[in-house]
Amino acid sequence: MANNEPAATQSKFKDDGRFIAILKRGKLTRGDVVALVKEALLENRIVDLRGRDLHDLNLSGLGLGRADLSDANLSHANLSNAVLFNANLHNTNLSNADLSYIDFSYADLTGARLGGANLYFAVLLKAIMPTSV
Image (cartoon, rainbow, N blue to C red):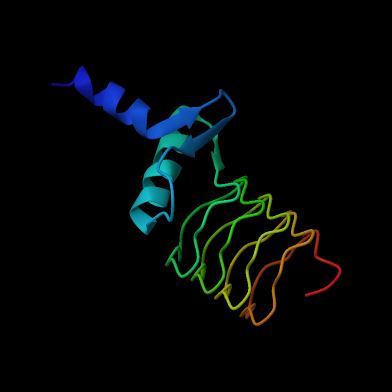
């Protein structure tokens, strides 16, 4: 049975040697994102959530350091206490998201939409911020 497990795991993810993405189409769940983060840690890859629909998800407390979330929809998501150290959030929709206590250190937020977002106690050390909200 153990021989079948790696094949099943591999079929859920696309690994190009640097980034790892989930193959599931459409809106992802917290469980999908957690599984992707675990797989990325195991394989020493960068989480790839480019362009994904993650709106309204509870992703609080997740470690998404170095993740590529460019062009993703995280509107109304709960990312409180999450770590997005050195993450790529270029053109990401973070409007009305709970970003309290988040760590955006060294993150690229160029073009990100932050209107209505809760940035209470957010860490923005050397983050590249959008020119407008």
